[in-house]
Length: 283
Image (cartoon, rainbow, N blue to C red; front, side):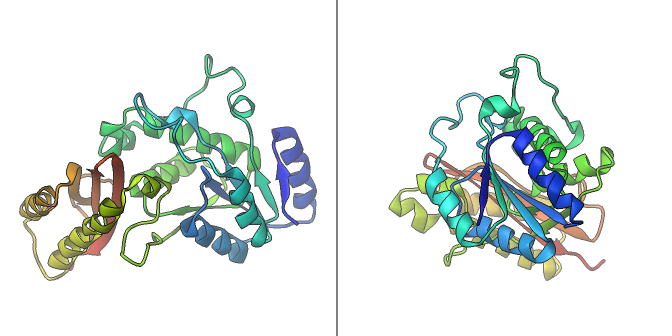
């Protein structure tokens, strides 16, 4: 039976008993509105550990001015039902005041400047500082052996890996490939905002990324040209482009190693879509 806990004190009491039994603990952080992408992370966590904690928390500090914090889909009852069907050990559902007890008037923030000010961070200033801060809080509260994240938000994944490395946290970060709808569209809670016609068009983003990756695998080296061609294709399909870049998979800077990543963020109507894919070069 899945335990539902709202306070840090109760959570720590529960996990203290779990650790006494020398069980391996995993954490799957979410903002709720659970879909198949989340469920795949949870199922993997169950394979990797003895005890799974899923957190559900819509984090206010990662929403920047004008974004959809109040409108973000909240489906707690159905989320807990889906999680419980998997026999997850514990779901942590804190209130905002539990994780930001000073109402954010006095708050320690976690920042990774080199990674948080580019790409999504450039267009959403402060977003990744909010992400790093809340993930740091959850890591400190749960103290998991393993934490599992999807690769859809590639920049976020690198920031979390950097957080763990630079704070010397004894946590293994496991990443899993993006879970997609049958059309190829990356699963996301924000897909709920798409109209019927937009949902039919949205998969074109991933098709474009795959085309870029295939050209690179087949020897294309002029990355700027590939970026221009992709942007033109998406613009003609009426996507509004925030960025579409080919960059180094480890630094997100100019390609240096043999693995690169194609990163993209676009708007389709009122919905912001992000996606990515990696490619190996063979120089």
